[in-house]
Each structure stands twice: as structure tokens, then as C-alpha cells.
Image 1 (spheres, helix red, strand yellow):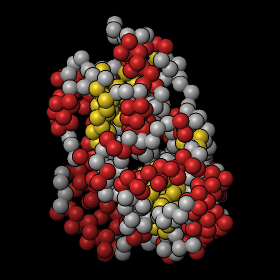
Image 2 (cartoon, rainbow, N blue to C red; image 1 turned 60 degrees about the vertical axis):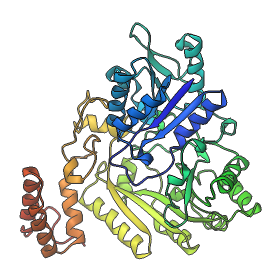
Image 3 (cartoon, one colour; image 1 turned 180 degrees about the vertical axis):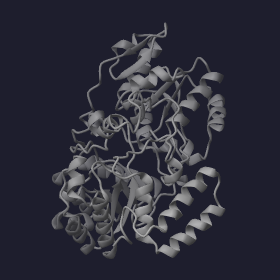
Image 4 (cartoon, rainbow, N blue to C red; image 1 turned 90 degrees about the vertical axis):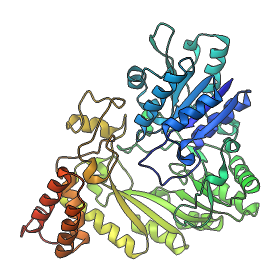
Length: 481
């Protein structure tokens, strides 16, 4: 069969110009059983939905599969609609984390989707396509939800996760133009890099993460030989010697990370790479070994400077962040720490703890930055948000939605942001602005923005902001320290 796999565009996530590994894994699994596969990475190829549809028409496939994220779900939905209008008989398939997490709502609301693949697709996709070709009953295929010929929605049994990751063929990078991916090693930003995954899953249960709902708490690892074989293939085939490990927690299994590092060193691979590391997995011995194997930067999800807030979001890691950062800095690594604001139980005092910690990290030359907390499907944050009426109890992830504070935060209006009721998003923006600027500096910026305002809503927000500057005491007191 001729199959087109599409990675949908995202206007709000332009920074990640990296090959869509999940889609390429599925593509290689389909090629392995004889299907003809075309991959369209619309982000990298800078294609809008109209251009993608024209390209699909020219290919005239039997099946179109699309993947996307919660951020770009409405781009995906619009693309399905456009495809069905011009190719009504093509089989349309939706896969990826958003489709998996919202599959019942998605198949109900998006009438242009025929099949949704739940979870990992490397085994499921070839199996249900075989059933489609041979006219077998889809109901016997694990891991899908679909409409039958009478329009009834049928959900099959969940498919067990793939334990033997070594059995999967390597991602089909030959189906995309790797020369167009201008990616560098995260944190270092010099060496050209390719993405790679050495394990799947994360054992933690942070409330903002959907791993528990996805069933991904169980960690499954590729063998070090398999991982390093992929590294060597990329070096030889594409002349790329930088790598970004996109594992949720590369250092979660000490034996795994050490075996990979030892093998890289043994084979004399002169590479540079980045990996994510939970703070409690960082120690001098492992960091030293990683550095010797070419690791030049690590990413740490710190989230908050308040132990109380960390407990409230079920992040059980302790705040020995400065010590962990020092260990990596002493080995000459770049350290990136990410934080979140507008978290459960977060007050002004907790916010101050977070920014105080960020300031201490920055003095050590750590890259530290924050973002507002987003709500994702099937997370504990979604449950809390519905409980607090941040989003409606009957909220549909696949129906039109616009988050009212999106313009204030410069965020994707379709993605709801968490609010704890103790501090509004405007409060937090004001706190950060006061912390980072003098009173007169803020006044000047506010007046300048008024002249650049796009609409009356912008002007109202800015006038309110400037008014606050003249209060002798705001809810945050005088200048934050």
C-alpha cells in the first residue's frame, strides 16, 4: 500500500527543527513489511495545510496518517477535514500522544478520522493495515479505536507496550532530508546534532505530566549496543557527530547510562551530546563518565524553588539543585534548569523562592528560565483545573477553545494554562516585571507598549499595569528582593 505519514505544522513551536522520531519509527516498521511510505514533515518543509493537501493529492495514497501534539491539535483536525474533502475514500489515521490521551473524545468530535492508534504504533500500524488490506475485522487488532462501516465507534483492547525495543528497526531518516534539519547540541548550540532515544518511560508521577495516563511509568531500555550502533550509523551516513538524547530521564538507570558511556569510549567515538537528568540521579562519578563520553550539556527539570510546591505537584525530588549543578559545572558542562510558575499552592513567598533560586543558579552561569504551567490531557493538573473551574467540567480537547489569558502570556490560545486561584497570571507577570526592572523602567516600557497596542484589550491590560506601578504598596509589597 502507498502510505503518507504527516507531522503537522505548529505555529507556536518553531524552535524545534528536529526530525520527528516517533513518526519515523512507525515509517520504518511499515517499510519493513513492504509498504511504500512517504513522510511529510510540514514543520521542516514549511508547508501549510493547503500545501500539504496538494502534495497528498499528487501522491494519491491509500492511507494518510497524521501525528501532532496537544499544541497543534486543531491544525491536525483541519488537515483531516481538508484531506477528506478531496480524497473521501482514503483511510485517515491519527496517532501520537494527543490522539492517544483523548481518543474517545477525538473519534467522537473529529468525523474525518477513521482510525486512532493508541500508544506505540510500530506494531499496531502494520497489523491493522494488514487487516484493512485483507478485509479482516479491525476489532481483533489491539490498540485502536475506529468507526465501522455503519459509523459505530468501536474500541479494541489496549496493546501491551513494546518491551524489546531492540527488535524495532531504526527510525526511517532516509525518508526525510536530514540536511534540512539545522539542529545543534542542546545547551552547547554549536555542534550539528541528531535526536536519539535510548529508553522509553519515566517512573515519576508529576502532576503536570501525562506519562501515568499513557502507561509510560515502566522504563524500557534499548541495549547499549543498539543505541551506539545507531550513533555510528548517523555519524557514517549523515556526517553528524552531535546528539540530543530525548529520553525523559536518560540518567534514571545508572547501569544503562554507564554501559552506553563505556561503549562510546571503547569505540573511540568523538561526539558531543545532551541529555536530561533528574536532579537526584546526578553524582560526580556518573557526570565525570558522561563528560568523558562526550556529554557537554544536561537539562534538569527543577520546576520550583519551594519544597511545599514540589510536594503539591507530586514531584518527589529534593532541592539539592545547586549541589547537582555544581557537579556538572565542575566538569565543564552546560547546565539548563527549567522552572514553572502558577503551580498548585504557589503563593508570593513560593514564587520568590523560585526566582531567588534561579538568580543563584544564574550567578553560577547556569541557564535557568521559567514558563507558565500548561494543562495537558489526562494529567492530574487537568483534574485539578476542572475541580477549580479553570476549565469546564465538560471540556473537550478537540472542540474549539480559546484561553482568555493567552494574549497576556504570549501563548497558544488553544492551550489552557493552570491557575491556582492564589495568584492570577497578571499578578505573576507583574511580580516578574517588578523584579527585573526599575519602577521608571517599567513605566517607560508600559507607555511604549500602549503606542504599539493592537486592540482595546491590550490597552486595558497595560493601563491597569501602569496604575499598579504608582501604588505605594502592591500585593507584593515594595520592590521584590
